[in-house]
Length: 386
Image 1 (spheres, one colour):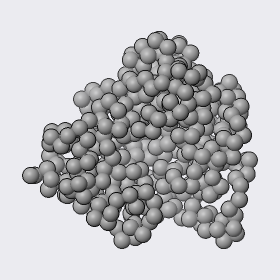
Image 2 (cartoon, helix red, strand yellow):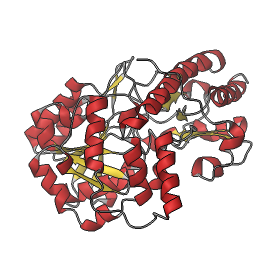
Image 3 (cartoon, rainbow, N blue to C red):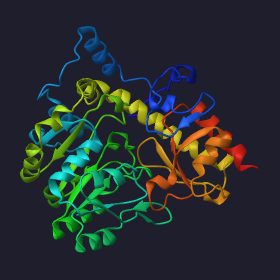
Image 4 (cartoon, one colour):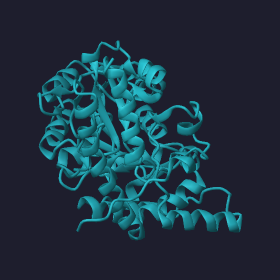
């Protein structure tokens, strides 16, 4: 069933926000860098938070507020897979979850595979957990990006003990298909490696491309994997601090249960309340409207680039509100976001921070209004025409 696109807030309202997106640069800069979106909160979330403020409900997060069950229901509705709520624990955010799970499953000095270009904090989180980053870049087929399963298996055979999977992938927006995920799980099982799947962008997968939760694709995946999930990206709740760690086997659930109690105590109480509302059926219509808006913006970005920045390379993402754009043909240097911000007054994320394949690229946040997106690309187009 189609939904009318969700309307983003106007620029004058957005500039009243005090978050990083709207306070890092001056008012002459359009901020399309950090992964915050410009939409109003889902009504159920707004109501839950307003009621908590009215009650002064600002204390500690309870040990079991039912979030595991609510997320399991959400996953079943949206992805056709229901995890066991008893095998789910919460914590502060996905990166904290990644570090704590890694600490539990690797030894200091173990190598951990990442698939660049990929979310920059992975390059810091793995050493924080005691691991060493082992990069196996995505394979560019000319029309899509895909996991280099053979390269990942070689890394496992050479001693890598884990992989941090980004699915859907940030920054390319690739939703890895079930076959490639099953092949990854099989490779990990053969070599005794662990797969930690960051699925924070999963609720934003387009219905046409679909999304396969890693833990659901095979028995091997259930045995070797953990999933890290959150409402923070889809529902714009990053500042409220709540994420979930999911296991699909009793062995991996035992790892989660053995984590220090403090890991779960770090869950933000407002994050919990907001996540309960986000994953509830009452927010499904809002999420569908958001997906419709993002679908239109992905197509709009393609049209705008073709008109104003015609040498740019762009593929429509399968998921999310982030777009990976190659502007290397313009000779704007290894890190073109610097020049674009200085000359066009548009802030984009720095391509080289994403590792191999990031030079000459920028990441564009399209989770905004068509008007702001159009203004941003037109500004960059002036620079491209010089």
